[in-house]
Image (cartoon, rainbow, N blue to C red; front, side, top):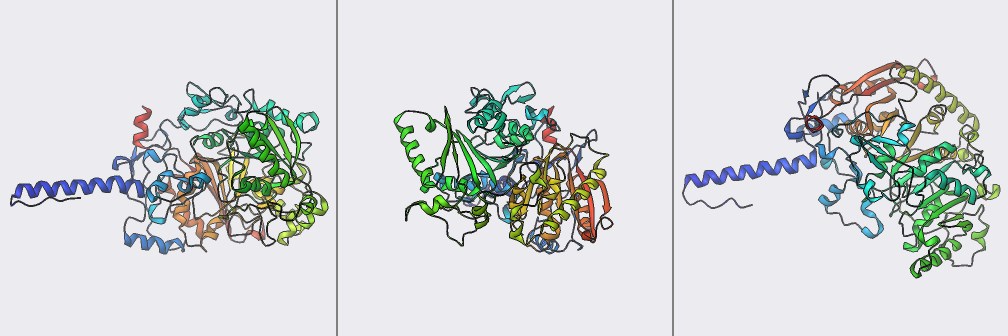
Length: 621
């Protein structure tokens, strides 16, 4: 930037100075706002229902070095005398769909050298502390409380996800249709134009399951749908008591997972790239890919081997793609190479019809042992932990079964729904007894009954659909919700006991995560967050509890709830931020009376208010 030269004229020096100041202020406005988050037009406003607009005042902690130091000190001391803001700034409206660790703008700004050919740019890349958006995510203009389940399976408010490009791009495949103020989902997909229900029945028929029901009398419960589109496959599996983890990246069809979650369908933003998916080994009975456009032959079949890690003994891979039926030279070549690869992986064709082939994984290690020496892909090393997933690179190797699974020729799981309350076979991996498991199940049933009693003045039977348990342990919180029409994303912290495999063995779903980082989902995803001792655990880490509160606000739908179940000092700390977060108290109660295990823990429930920025209100009008 050139300041210009002085020619002795005072007027020219004045003009030059004004230009410099103007450019500098412009730089601060553009780059400061994009990096740290800003208030819209410098004066964001909020509206609560019919109340008048209220201007946001002071900024979030962290505006200067001194404040940064104070924030760092308070992060590890929930009972300190830290400065508490009366308000947090609101992010620009253009960040209404921000996903902190899947932000393309961050990748561009940081000029990250990523390998696009292996989808590395769609994997998690979290911002450093100075680049975090420490601001509240505003809803889009015209946002409405989401349509309730089960109606939401078939339609959502267009204003909540104002993106209609998929309706045009997939108009011949019945993914979605725009109708007035709503977006309607007819249940179609790339390979099931006539409806997911008929396609699912056809797969069950191919496998000779009774009554063309894919749940196979409760033996098939958990499904991984790779490249799921708007998750209609997963949506229609629910009526068969099958729960699918619908998976897709934030790619060119970037709102497909957002639509799935808005519909009330379990879904997760992820990609088969270079890292293992955040699920333990032997989690799914079926993996599914309907024209998911994945190159399964790349890197010695490493992506197919990741599916192999995730499939249970005897699990299936249903693959609907041109290679399975087309007769042109290129497709035939791919089919031959893929058939050769899965053969060396000991998969066999269970059925092949029309557009779909279904492979089955072996029940035991016998086939692996019978292969010729030096056969590729090799077996994984004995010291490889197939359940270690957080930031772990995929390996082009086959994960053999444990001696227990090899002996019983399968996972030894009870059919659904009995498996929900039956002690999982992998309990022994943690030294847990059946009695411990049963007592944990009973304890959480009592706790959930208490939670619902506290929530009862605020909710109806269909108020809550999407739930996240932020520290799921063995999944007993989710198990206690069996009688309600909800689904739970069970999150197991990456630095604790890796109990996620017990959760999948119970017929539930979940993921591993580090709560010092943003979760891989869109804003306004969940109706209820359950935070049992999550903040107590955060005391032991070098990350900010304020950041986690802002992240929880991002995850929560307007009018949604958070159940904090933690120590009294932590609840007192959270209470200080209620005004800044625009949360209101629903209930608070001591828990120590219900069980000696609760100690000094307290139950504290809040509800998030529905608010808009001034800019959003103008756009709505």
